[in-house]
Length: 194
Image (cartoon, rainbow, N blue to C red; front, side):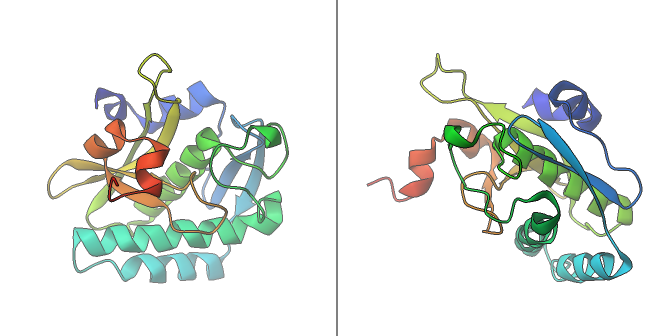
């Protein structure tokens, strides 16, 4: 878990992303941040995003549900600008280097940018954005994977906010990080384990 204790800026440097500048987020796509497209949030966008996140003010659990809605909103909002409205979820190696298609590096970067933006606006009451986390190294039998992370400031427990598995605009997986580190995609497709 020490990986999330480094500054999020180290992720952008390592992965070739671009940090937010004011109301502009740089959306990664094409796998591994091959392409970066600037999207500037308008006042209307800011009002919408603030309203979505305000619904989570009663508890950390409610805020994680609001974060899920905010990620879905962002994906739909940026889709027409970056060409990602038809982004295919999960492992889709056939779309590497295709503009608008996103792998887990792109998704982790974009969600982190949104979370950092929300933090900077004071819209998160119970969470702070952290550096994305990675798991899997082939040697452990798991495909390498990365996800955005928020830390619950009431418990200091990290939660992944993983929008990679499902297609554009669908709810991200929000899971306790220690559980996520041991999971495979198959675990998510069959959560009962049977």
